[in-house]
Length: 155
Figure: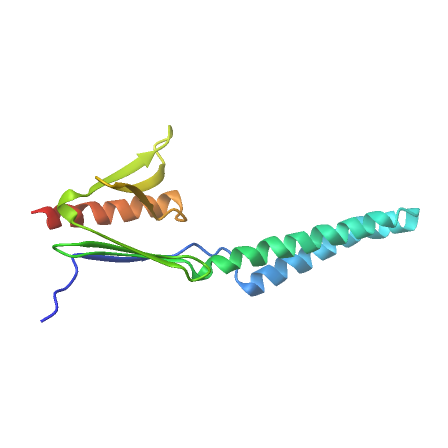
């Protein structure tokens, strides 16, 4: 019979824009760039129009590059006798770590304004940061759920 985990979480990066949202932002930026573009073109400063087009192209590249992170995730599973962390990068490279929960310390690092900046798993071998791509609020919620589960595993 298989045992149920004490805690399981799948952490994924936040996607603020969908591909349709990116298209909307680019269309809006094109319209807004066209206004001064026409004025500069009418004044004979046509190279500015090319630079405005370059700005739009760079904006499109930046927004679509951020969508590539959608394939990255971290899977954290806490069993009574093991803490398994599986990290997959956006390119599909996988790293799997396993620890004894009794020898693990969970640390929440905060800044001067009491926001969570990092979540760290510390062992004798070193420290490993989890949920690096999470927002401070998401890190806070994860810590609130994970800490009691880790305490249960140590009993």
